[in-house]
Length: 205
Image 1 (cartoon, rainbow, N blue to C red):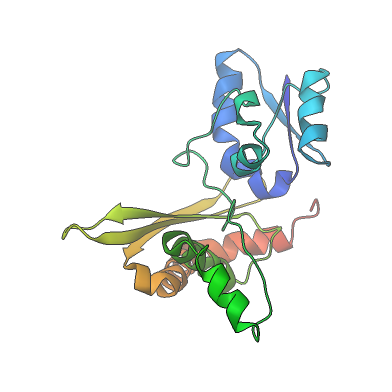
Image 2: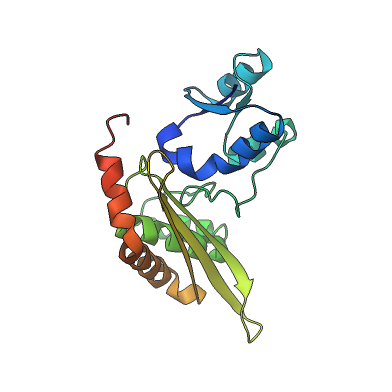
């Protein structure tokens, strides 16, 4: 049986396992998910030294470290949504330093900001923490009038992957936070609260 490592197995077990399980099935093997710890070097070394058959890491981290070529497969977001605000970078400064605030404003990427606002609003409305199996991805798409709109997808998955609620919403960039809150409400109406309840009662965090 093939063994794949991940830093947060409970969070991703049900959500990301579909693609690796398919790959393992094509090779005639099952798949066992192994919890691991350590930085990117440590995790990749576990594969290089034969301790694990694969590891699942965030591609954003590999890109920043210029190590993306070491990935043998990139999982499509249609198969596996990332954690909310995955890969986003932020710069924090003193609010009373107007000159610095203005200078940093040049670094602000408004489409990314809108996407992150939508994803984080979804997470906050669900009242879910970083260990919760919640995924979200906001992307910019062209609306019917040729302008830009946010396409937000969200998912909540049970610890064992047996239950999942996945929905989406669209809206304007100006309504990013509202889109996130409304999609979270849609997820709750569809049973996400029950799934999150399973997480709280999971004896294996």
